[in-house]
Image 1 (tube, rainbow, N blue to C red):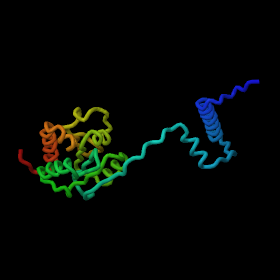
Image 2: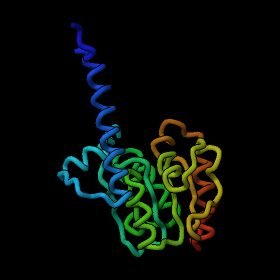
Image 3: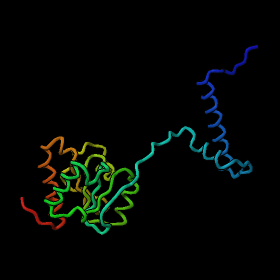
Image 4: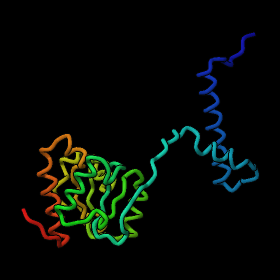
Length: 196
């Protein structure tokens, strides 16, 4: 007599997943009706609740530097901040804006929750996002940066200026003029004096 049970690993996994899903649904139904007589371990509960959910890749840590009283808050798509060639270029941009690098607050865009929390805590006057990742993270936009940079956006009453990342300017120097125009707008609303 032949068994209906397959020894195929793919089939076994599918059957096991179905049984666990059915059991999870059964436990949920019991809980919703107030029948909680069946006790299971916390690790089993966690396993059932997360079954089928792909594990997320480990996020890079939320990094920041600068005074929390800074009026200019910068969100960097990268984590090097003021280091390397792109960092040197950004320091030149800050100097042209009459801003010392230690007078601005800068953080990375790796952890959106931490970015939002830090902004809420600090309440800066103006936010500058450097690069696509930072701009999309803060403003929740899925369109290319070129389509929304160069003008102020609102983030809970705070002005946000999305602009190109200095590393992109190293690859495409033709964008330098656009970034400078963006920074002139920031200077204007922030009360910083500049020349043309």
